[in-house]
Length: 196
Image (cartoon, rainbow, N blue to C red):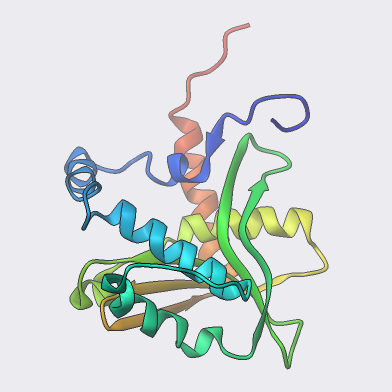
């Protein structure tokens, strides 16, 4: 609920609206089970959140090949956590979502990073995984609406795979927010028009 009304859309729904049936089937095929992306993602997000909040976490040792490179990545050194799993709603559009983390450099608190964690099943996939620019743009736009004094300096995609972690850096203004605006426009164009 936002302003006494239901929020009609979430960021994931919007950014995946034009996904092909083939891509949707491929995602669904690998979603469930002990090696599925859903469980892997849930575990790694929980571990990263605990790490950023300086809390202990317990996980099965089979996830260590993902966790050790993730938590030791230089991105997460010398930082302080601003937010984790932070729910945001757009003040002007009926859309909401949760960003994975917002962190800042301890030695330069004005350098604020908004990040999204993506997990992959293989080392090879770490390199080929695309960055979710529109998704990051949605969160950056909403963050700026609510926290204009803590401007997002950089958006990052953290791709975690077995024995490898890669961080991709993006400009909120040049890369992410324009990708979100384009995605939102295409999504809105497909929505039914209310007949009053």
